[in-house]
Length: 263
Image (cartoon, rainbow, N blue to C red; front, side, top):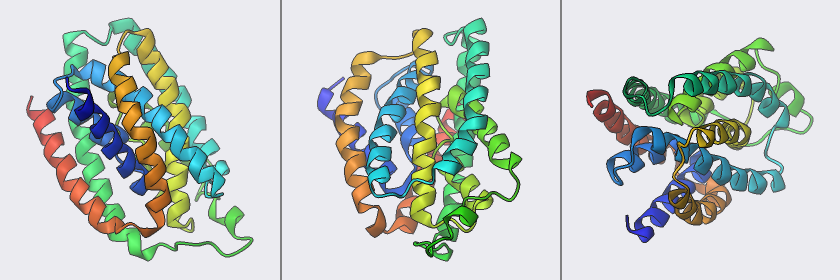
C-alpha cells in the first residue's frame, strides 16, 4: 500500500469532515475496502480510531472558536456510549472475523451509507434555511430538545450503528440534530456533531482494538493526513459552498452503499 496515497486519503477525508461534519466513516470505510483492499472488520475498527483522533483535533479547533454546544454533546453521549458498549459486548461474544458477522457488517454498512446519502440530501436542502449565527442569550433555548429523551434515544441508535459500521455519526447525526434542535445555527450543529462523535468513536474504536480489529500502521498514516486536513476544514467551514459539497458526496455515498449491499 503506497503510504502517500493513504496519507492523501486521510487528508481529503479530514478536510471534508472539517468543512461539513460528514465523511469520517461514511467516506473512509468504503475507501479502505474498495481502494486499499482492507477487510471490512479491519476497515471498521481502524476507521473508528481514525475518526476519534481526527474529530478530537477538529473539536479543539471548534472549541477555541466557542462553537461547541456542550449540553447537546452530553445528551447525545448519554445514549450513544452505553449502546456502543452493549454492541461491543455482542461482538466480543461472536467474534468480528466470523463470516456471518462480516456479512452483517458489510450489508449494514451499505444500508448505513444509503441512509447517510439521504440524510445529506436532506441537509443540503435544509441548509440555506438555517441561521448561521445566534442572537445573544438564545443559546440555552436553542440547545433544548423537543423532548429530553429524544437526544438519548437517537444517540443510542447512532451508537449501535457506528460501532457496527463506523458510519452514522456524521450525516445521520447532523440530520438528527437538525430535527431535534431546529433553532441551533449551522456552525454549532456541525460542531456538536463532530464533538459528540469523539467519545463515541474512541470507546467503539478501543473496543474493536481489543478484538484485534485495528490496523495500527494504516491508522498512523491516515492520521498523518487527516489531522492537518480537519484543522484546515474547520477554519474554512464558514466559507464553504456546503450545499454543493454535500450533494456531490451524497451521490458518491449512495453508489458505495449499493456496491456494498451487492457484495
